[in-house]
Image (cartoon, rainbow, N blue to C red; front, side):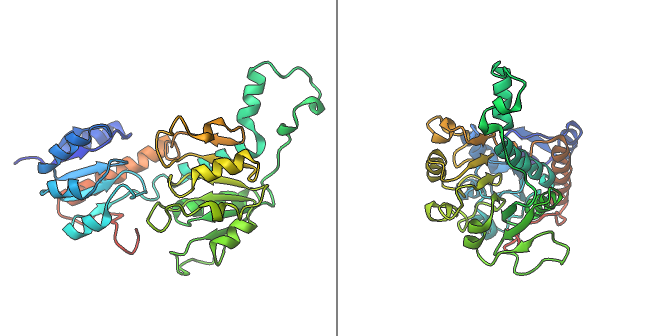
Length: 327
């Protein structure tokens, strides 16, 4: 019997033993993001496509006449044309929740870097600029602030947003959130209070952390008008998807100190363009979309993907099936 053809549409991390399980399940074709044309050619007889960032659009779907499923590596589905997929009756899954701990912890790494200037302090010591043992002789920028009693505003309250809320509570922060998609479906144990609207959260929060997916509704959500609602002392953290925040406006406001600092792991264009003004600022911390890059997250995602793939190949319903109600 001919084994199913499974395309890895881009290069993502998988456990070695899970790669072997995939090889036993089907014939694997490994591609990279730069091999778009090869993907369009090879999908014609493929059964499954697994993609972290590769575009799954109508052109690809029209060529993939044998497709039994699309598996998303990670949570975000902005690279998948869900409307086109639904029209063809192809199941789509993601691995939501598998990297929640990883992204939440990077969120606080960026946050702490912004308030304590740890990366700048490291370069200060490394550059042999630390010449006095008197703390009063250190640059004023190394006198930071504490998270305790600060208001943390979370935009998007899924698995990652809730994990961030729990960590924030551990730091003694006052946590609020905005997520219009929840419709009151929260238990009393949730460690945060809801905000009625986004404007209220932006005006109130000392630190804003973005954990919403990139959708037509959230594209450019934090535009010039919204960003100007932030306090001059506020800090913005973005670890969900680029395109939600207007990076050009944000960079201008950071340059004018209209916002105190920002930490970004995601960008509208990745890799970040060399002409981006964000690269010239000293009050921003930038990382190369590493939010979900932990060993533990790779374990969780790998095991979820092989379970989903095996289910689809054998005609069963996979876990984390994307439907209009939970996109």
